[in-house]
Length: 249
Image (cartoon, rainbow, N blue to C red; front, side, top):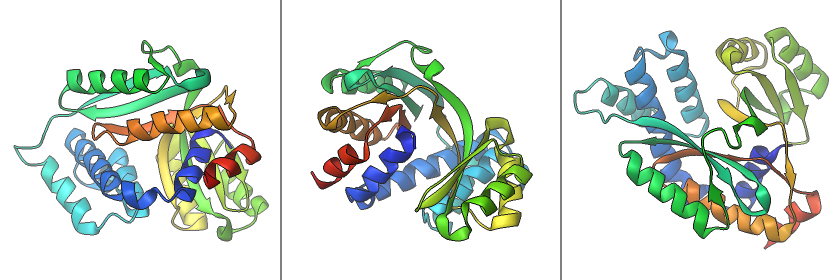
C-alpha cells in the first residue's frame, strides 16, 4: 500500500486517534461548512457536501455537529476560508502535499514553512512535488464485506480503476471526477463504505528506513496538528519490518 494508507495504519497502531479525535471533528466540520457554502446546503444536490458528510459519519462525527456545520454555512457570520495546497520535501527526500483551509494565508504559510524547516524538510513551490501524485477518488470497505473477487467485480461494474485488497480492507480507486458516481454504485452493491474521499495517490514512492520514518512521522504529525491543515499526504514506502519496529517504538 502507498504512503497515505500505511500512515493511517501507523497512526491507529500508535493510539493517536483519540488524541486527534476533537481536531478531526473540527476539520471535518470545516469541510462540511465550506462545501455547503460553495454549493447547495442539501447533500443530495451537492456532491462535495455529500462526500464531506459521508466522511464525517464514517469518523463518528455526531449528527448534531454535522447539522450545525451545514447551518453555519448559511449564516451571515460564516468564516471565509481559502483552500491552499502546499508542496515540499520531508526527511530523506519524501514528497509531501499539505492541504489547508485558512482565513489567514500569511499565518498558515508561515506555520507550514516553519514546520518543514524545523523537522528536516523544506517547503517548495506549487508543483514541485505534485507530479509524483495523481488526484484520485478512494473508497474503503472492510475485508468482511466480501472476498477480493467479489469486491473487484463490484468495483469494475461501478466504473472504478483499481482495487487493493488485504486482510484488513478493500481500497477501491477511481478517477477523481467519478468518485460520487462510483461511490453510489458501490453502496448499492456492497452497502455503506468505511470511507469515501478524494486523495493524492503517489505514483512515485521513496523507500525509507526506521530512522527516516521516525523523522518523517514527526513532521507529518506536527503538520496534522495545525488547525488550518486539513490533510497531509506523503509518498513514502517502508518495509513491514520497519513498520513493525516503528509501531513498537
